[in-house]
Amino acid sequence: MAFDLDRRSMLAAAGLSLLAGGAQAQAPQGSQTQQGAAPAPAQEKGRPVLIRGSTVVTMDPALDVLATGDVLVRDGRIAAMGAKLEAPDAEVIDAKGAILAPGFINSHIHLAQAILRGLAGDATLDQYFKVVVARYTRHIRPEDLAASDYAAALEQLNGGTTTVFDWCREALTPAHADAIVDAMQRSGIRAFFGYGVTGPAQGGAAIRADVERLRKGPLASDDARVRLALALRGPDSSPMDEAEDDFRFARSLGLLNQFHVGVLLYADRRRRGVADLIAKGVIGPSAILVHANDLDPDEYALVAGAGAAIVTTPEVEMMMGHGQPATGRARGAGLKPGLGVDVVTGVGGDMFSQMRTMVSAQRLADNLAAAQARTPLPAVTLTARQALEAATIDGARLLSVEREIGSIVPGKRADLILVRADRLGTAPLNDPIGTLVFQANPGDVDAVMVDGAWIKRNGLLVGRDPARAVANLETQARALYARAAQPKTPG
Image (tube, rainbow, N blue to C red; front, side, top):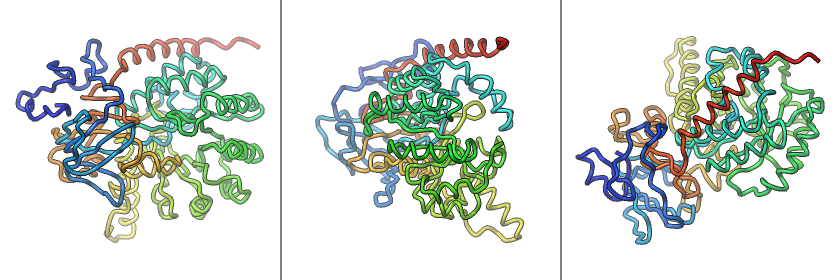
C-alpha cells in the first residue's frame, strides 16, 4: 500500500491504494519500469503539502526523531513541524507506517558510467581503467551522456537520493557538458556537475574555457538545482605543479572540487602529496578528497585543519583494492566523511547498500583488531546513526549546503523521502534509524520530494517515463559498444 490522501486506513483491508484523482488501483511494486504502468498522481502546482503521522527522522540533534509527527511543506521549504498540524489549504498525505527522512546525498558518483553498467563487476582497479575507462571514454558522444546521466539520475531519485556530486571525466567538449547539464535539469535531481579538468597536453585550456562559459551562463547561480563544480586530477594523477595550478583555478572561481587520492594501487601514487599541497595553501575548504584510504596518519588531521573534507565509497573501495575504507581514521582526526556510490560499472547505485557497507567495513576492521589483541570489543565505533549522517547531513556539510538540505528543520528546502516501514522486511518499526540503515532498500522508497515537488509518489516516478529512459539508454549503449569495437584507424 502506498501513502495516500487521508484514505489509507479505509483501503488497508482491501490492499488497495487510490491515486490522487480517484479509484484507480496502484500498479504493483516495480511496475513503473513497465509499459502501461499507472501514472503517479500529479501535484497541484503551488499547493502546500501536509505529511501527516509519519515517524520523522530529522537528523537534527535538537529535534532527533519524532515518533508521530506532521511536516508542512510550503513554497518548496519545510514550513512547520509538530503534532496535529492544521493547514486547510494543504494537500494532506496520510503517512502512518512510514519513515520521513531527508533525501540521501550521494557525495561521489560517476553518472556517465551508467551506460557501462555491470562491465567491471569482476574487475580489479587496473582492469577497470583498462577495460572500461580507456576503452570507452574516448568514444562517448553527447547523446550517450544525455541518456546515461538522465537514466542514472532517475535511478538515484527512485532510490531516495535527492542530491549527487557527479565526478565526470566524460565531458570531452562543450556539447558533452551541455548534454549532461540538460539531463540533470530534466531529471529534477539536485546535482553538482563536477566538470573534469584535464592537463595541458589533453586540452585542459579548452576545458577551462568551457568551465568559465558555464560559470557565466547556464550554471551561473550558486543557488540553482544544478550547480557547477570541478573534478580535478589531484597529486596522484598529475604532476605536482599541474595539481597545484588546478586547485588555484578552482579557488579563483570559488568552486567545490573533488579529486581521487590516497589509493595504494594508483600508478602515480605520491606519498604525502596531500600534505605538500596543504602546506602550499592550495587545498582548503572547497576541496573534497575521494577515497583517501592510504594517507599517512597525520594527513587526516592536516585535511581537517585545512577545512577540507573526505568522501568514502566503501563498496567499490573494498571490491577493487583501494584499501580499508578511511571512515574510522578520518573520524578519529575530527572529520565526518560523506558517502558515495562511485561507479555502477561494478556495484549497485543505491545509498542503502553504501550505508550498510560503510558500517560493515568499519566493524570488520574493529573486530579483527580486537580479535588480534584478544580483547573483546567494548562497543562499536561506527553506529547506524553515524552512517545515516554520512548519507544526509554530513554529505550536506561536505557540499557546503547544510543550511539548505540534509536534515528536516523548518526553513530548509523540502528534499524528503518516505520509506515504507510496514513491510515484511521493515516491520515492526522498533528503531527507525536502524531500519533505514540495515533493513530498508530502494523498493521501500514510496515517495521522494525535491524542493517541495513530488518526484516519486505511491512508488512511481511522477512526470517521468523510466521505461523510455531505459530504452534510450540501451539504444545508446549498443551504439557506443559498436564504435568501441571497431579497429583503430591507422595514423
